[in-house]
Amino acid sequence: MHPTQELAIQLEDAFEKLRDLPDCLEPLDEDLDLKLRLAASLCRNAFMSFYKNDSHDLFHIAVIGGAGTGKSTIVNFLVGTEVADRNPQAGYTRHPIGYTASDHRPDKQFHNGRLGPLTLLTRPTAPNLDEDVCQIRDLSSAAADKDFLRNIVVWDCPDITTDLSRHYIQRVIEPVSLADLVVYAASDERYNDLIPSRFLALLLQAGKPTLCCLTKLAREDILTITTAFRNQVLAALPSNHLILNVAVLPFIPPTALADPTGAGNSYRQALLDCLRPWQQQAARHRQEAAQRALAFLHQVTQELHPRVESATSLLTDWEGLLRRPGENFRTGYLRHKLSDPVLAEHFDNAFVKLIALLDWPGHASVLNLPFKAIRYPWAWIKTLVVRTPQTIPRMEEQILRDLWHDWRNELLATLGQFSAENPFWRHLHQELNQPSVQSKLESQFSRCLKELASATDAETSRIAHAIHQDVANHPVLLNSLRSLKFGAEVATVATVLWVGGLGAETLLIFLLTPIIQEITEYFGKQYIEMHKKTAALRKQELVTNIVVDSLMGVLTSDAIKTVADLRRYTDSFRQITNTLPTFRALVEAEIRAAHTPVGHST
Ligand SMILES: Nc1nc2c(ncn2[C@@H]2O[C@H](COP(=O)(O)OP(=O)(O)OP(=O)(O)O)[C@@H](O)[C@H]2O)c(=O)[nH]1
Ligand SMILES: [Mg+2]
Image 1 (tube, rainbow, N blue to C red):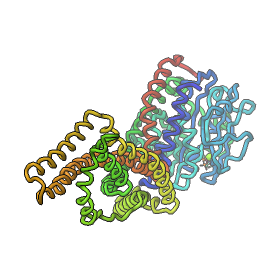
Image 2: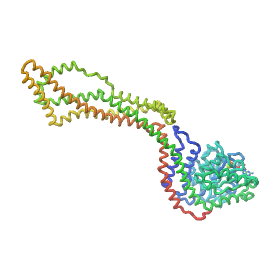
Image 3: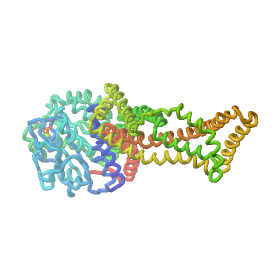
Image 4: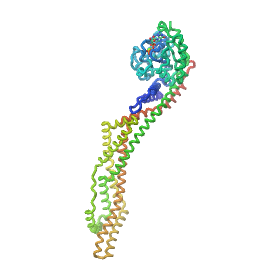
């Protein structure tokens, strides 16, 4: 596939997606919806001739207008024979029908994605078939003006009159996007109808060269109505310089209506005369229209920008909203973690091992015995006096589960408060309250717990183990500490005996020696507490990485439909802003490179 075509398809897809608004956003107004439809359709239809290098590429004329304005009649006068069904029932033609007499099969042009949503019918079918279809009729064996139709397809389109025509507006938008020239029909009675006039304004904004055609005018009204149409309708339109001319079809007698090249030939020639300037420069018009269509795509993107920005900021707000309870989860966890009995047990064991290290090992351990004996009475009294506080053991899992539920409840409460502000918060609140979503989050939470358990068990015991291992691995430090403690104990005993001799004062030994032990244990405890805090912080990090981030990940991911919808919307827009400049540059390069035959004539 040609790279430009790939980009065109991406853009088309992104514009379509921007129409498909998520429920959590304010609906598009009709005007913007039409612009998006047109933008997507232009991407499908308007640029292909610049990258397909198809020498049999045909020019397209789309005849549009209000119901019963005479579109099918104009088509008959253009092609030179009565092939399009004229019908007094307004709104009769319900899908586009293209007429041509090209030597090359025009339906082949539709194999590559043109007129995208419309199915090409393979057999002639009545024009009032009210479905998303289109037809191409080959007039090469009919009594049509084959010279005119050699490289032109004339499209008879459904009407654009009322809100009722909304459901088939796409059947007008497709041929119009494809068209190199739009013929806009307006009848004597209703030449300034609001909806068709608005549609005309939109086409001009999109850069389509247009020929207006006033129909069924009584001879005496021609001047008045033409002037009124120019002043009341055309003058108010933006880009009205793209209106090539205003053709007039006076009220045609029935005999002439049925015979466009015979009795009706004078009407036909007048109409063709208005077309001729465009026809002579059709290729140049096509190039200029493509450039204007590119500008239109850019303009639509600009118009969407504020909406998309507010959608993006809703997503950012949502992440911010999650962060605060997430932070409470982390600090709450740290608080619980420091009094966690499992962690305490790890470090209590480490403490016992650390203190034991300060005794002499091996044969020298006999040196410890007298001091152990001296300390025994104090140690015994201590077990009676100092009671270890009974912590109520709470399972780690329960702590985390409670914290998670607090987090979730706070979120729901906040979303509930915001619900009135914006449909996004309301949808999010409703979705997070759904049992299926809650169970999705619960099972994600359980998965996190398992992962956390295996990741942290090893981590805590590693840190606790490392405490006494570190000291044991530094023999100089260890022996210095042992000597210091032992020296202090010996010095205490010696001093008491030397100063007081054997007597009642000797009992002081049983008081002072345990004090040295208490001081040693005090410093040992501080050392352990330091590491305990490190372990708790490390675990907090793991909780953050494994539980908090993962739950935040789920809550901000596409698993939550409201978030996914909004993100798809902003992503589609980003796709356009990323792709459009390159696409524009490529198409403009193709336009510059395109061969423009001077005075190209059909
Ligand atoms: N006598 C006469 N009848 C006309 C003229 N122009 C259109 N009509 C009639 O007006 C009716 C509507 O004309 P169409 O050409 O079918 O109009 P349309 O815009 O294609 O209508 P829809 O497809 O229904 O939207 C038909 O009955 C035509 O015969 C005209 O100049 N003279
Ligand atoms: Mg019709």
